[in-house]
Length: 337
Image 1 (tube, rainbow, N blue to C red):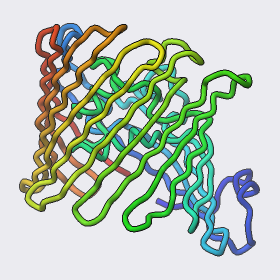
Image 2 (image 1 turned 60 degrees about the vertical axis):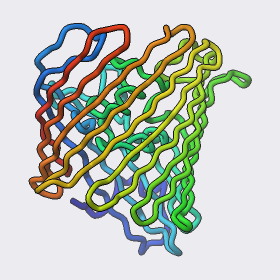
Image 3 (image 1 turned 180 degrees about the vertical axis):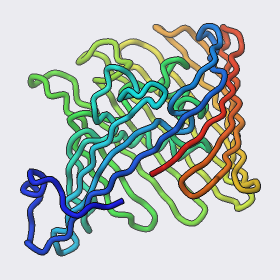
């Protein structure tokens, strides 16, 4: 849905020629699931009605103003929400617009964003597995990003105080870079850095990411802790099936420790939907984390009611080497608007 005009303050900030074209669009994803939730070493299983099965629910509005000569001013503000309770954010500490909150410019030279920006590493992990951006049900994202499954990658899925630049696509390649400024006194080690190279052509997709974080969730001491992550992922659409694979390593520079995660998956068209299958394994080594191995597998089916609405069913097994098996059953619905 589109509305003419943009807020007066933003229009003044992004003002161009009097004839400039502008628009605002409201959009988002609403995702709910019910079932049994259990993770290995996470305590007893529970019956749940939860928000965010295949994708974390969010809403937002964004837009663009045509400045002429191919240049556009862009903006977006997006916030997460928990549909099961009607509260905002993924947790009580989330900001109102924790997913994205930026303004920027877009043109022939690429795209520049300034504000709170989605982390390119998170985007790369979502592209490299059949369950997409599901932090709860996708084995890869659950092991890499979720606290209940011992997240291996530190920092948030979006970065504060960020400057992000994405190059134009050339020959199927594009490069996304991001810096998150710590906004502390000079000399304090609080800057985050990340870069992602992506290639997409025909049935192929490949992505490489390097990230260094010094501030954000998971880090023990702001300004002193540091983690470096290297990620490689990709997919190949063979028609009868789409294959996925990824590998990453996350190395703690101050507190010794390393987590290595491998993942393989497939999506197979079946009737009015797709069968999804993925397995991931993380091996942790070194203090402060004891040497452990976690294996997580998921089997699901997406049933497309329309281009924007789908039903899904997922069964997930999760096993930490030092604990008993955890089983999750999920029946859900995702609606995009």
